[in-house]
Length: 196
Length: 413
Image (tube, rainbow over all chains, first blue to last red; front, top):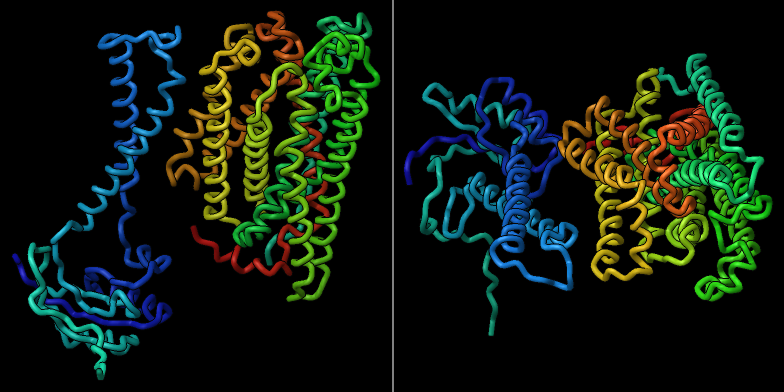
């Protein structure tokens, strides 16, 4: 499981409370590891000071790779590897190549970007990561602050509490991902007792 | 206090009048040097009429595209464009003058000229022993053509007049009164239907495709629409940037520029898609009655324009406008707007000229004639500047009682 770090976790149930809290925590110099939200929150990445993603640059590179692959492959096949006479058409018919070139461009860009995205987010089958709060996928916005040796947890907790967090706690969690299972089965909902 | 009231500067007026002057000069010089008073079916006369049609139809469709912008965004409840919607409104104000000019030129050509090189279906004697044209006679004849043209331009004018009236009444009305907004929805819904039935289908058949009367393509109208629509968006962009530079439109920022830029980018690709769909099917089936359209364009005197058209309308936008930061940069979007307005003007040029002039090598290769084209275009641009500038002064630049104003101000892409 690798390195284990200490985090102060604050949960918010309102965007309007979350944004000023993010601003204050950052201004105080604490490092926000991430804010886990159940839905996309407009402008949150900006408020967190996150770098603009370079996923689209990667996508462009994958795209032109697809374009060149398609064009090089087809022109090689139809001119030197296996020239065919198709209805008297030229051996290098660019218009007929364009749909396939387009498809390959899209395919390379799409598949490449999905894989890159999974890599960047450390998502893969059987890969597990620590959940700071189960309601982060339901109705809570979970702010996770990374602690260093010098961080005074009580101070951070007090700060989160005074900024409108509905729930504050300290967790020790592995930094990266691990393969396998979660330690304990979590019970999200109360099982209904049915009388037969 | 923000600057809501646009005032035309002297420089703007000078430029507009200078461009109109260039246009008039080009028309006069063209009249003399192309010997328009001479033989009706000579090269010069055909060229003169073709140039007039090219520019009047192109700039009219660009202005109608601005009205389509308003309609589409209104119908989609797109609030983001509210703070800049007075710009497309003002551009659609060109529909009256541009429509009148196009009407005069088209009807003038059909009824007033002896020339039959552009619309050879108007020559009854020729149609009588032309099997294809006899078959199309119910559709391609002077009476049908003129009724349809008058009707189409009339409806465009009426709807944009009605829209403008309601939009101005909203400014004067009580804040929070939604009745004006619902009225604009009715007008815009009507306009979308009209636009689909005119620019989206029949009008390009009559005005442009009938130049190559034997040939037809079911892609043609969409392709014309895409061309005029990209040019219309570019013109909207240019006016927004101009007004921003002059210190107006304070609530319009990079977010709005970005969205218009996305539109320009996306519809440039859409244009290419339609262009290619039309081209590839004809190329693939390789039938003489279809390939005749591309013969003069691809192999004749218009070869350079054919490839230039693809480069500036597809390669340039896809490479330059792809990045997010370039769609948010005033300099790049201005540059691309100018390039695309010229590019689609060139696209209309290659729709009209080869068919009218029967691939005459004098035309596509002659720089002098191209300068004549550009001169007439300059006149129309001056006219658009003058009219749009005037329309912008007529109302506050912020439709302050529009229900989506706040949404537009806080807009964030």
